[in-house]
Amino acid sequence: TRRTIELRIEQAKQEWERTIDALPDMIALLDRNQTIIRSNRAFADYMGKRPQDLVGKKCHTLMRNQKYPYQFCPMTSVMKDGKPIVAEEFDEESSTHFEVSYIPYLDPDGTIIGIVHALRDISRRKKMENEKEQLQANLLHAQKMESIGQLASGIAHEINTPTQYIASNLDFLLESFQDIRELIAGYEELWNAAAEKKFNKDIVDRVGRIRDQVDCDFLVEEIPKALEQSKDGTDRVTNIVRGMKEFSYPGNREKNPEDINKIIENTVLISRNEWKYVSELQLDLDQELPQVSCLRDEMGQVILNMVVNAAQAVRDKIGPNPEGEKGLISISTGFNGSQVKIEIADNGTGMSDEVKNRIFDPFFTTKTVGKGTGQGLSIVHDVVVEKHNGNIYCESELGEGSTFIIELPL
Image (cartoon, rainbow, N blue to C red; front, top):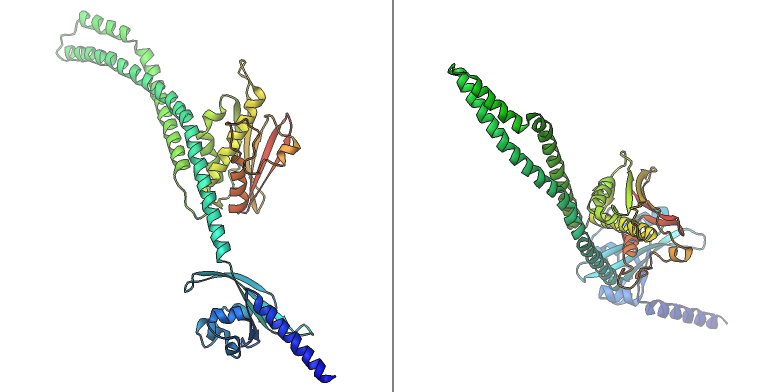
């Protein structure tokens, strides 16, 4: 009967309303003029009203206290092109993060007759994301400090070598200056004698003996060499110190355009003591490489981890090496129009497919206990993929070596 049909319709309507009211998401149905037709209880509670009190209210008046829709209202856009919009918004008054959805509401013919406006409280998710980000930042900082500690002795050695020959050159120059000063005194005496017309053979012979003892030809040849070596030494020390300062200095938390080639050169310089005894290192850097928007210090950590891993792989393959045999590490950069590509290759031990499939897993390591934490490549993956929307993958053959390819979008 008609009455039975009406009861069933009313029952279905109530069941649907109770279902929508049970949802934690805040949902409102609006017509084409952004007037609220219906809302669930969560939406009404958020507005501090009853659901029936919201019916007939304008969305922009209720939520923004504005008489007309604001210029860039997402609902206007959805009504025009029918494409749903999902965005995140922060309500300062309630300190709540929302995921806000604007979904077209269609009649049976597919015509847009309104908007489903839904708000989901994602404050807990955002808090967990922030905590995860902070944990990752702390982990990266801890590894950075660990890297600095590991590099410290090598850097001290790298600085010690040029300072030693600078000191030796200074001793040579000091000794040479004493001889030169004695020779100058002799020439001064010779000059004065000539000026006073007291020039005689004894003075000439005495100055000649001094000149022979000083060995002027030797000094003229060696002093410029000593000065040039000392200049090279001070330049090397300056570069090492500058490189270490750039590596250890806390970078910006915002991405900035950076020279990837410079980051690589700097990292290779400060890590030299890690690879120079076991490997040659070749650079093939594209000098036309565009700058990449990135976190400089974190990309420096990525390159350092890769270089140290490559050196260790070569060292493990060479083993005890009394003949002084060396492997090869090569780093190249290139650009394919939309991405900058970094390749870091070595001819070390290589990896099996089983190991290769797990190298980016946190805490996975093939090193013996106490030799590795399994965090190096995990951090590399997080920085490249999660923080820079890039990609990293590995090509490796057991016993032949490995190549890591990093792709960074501009």
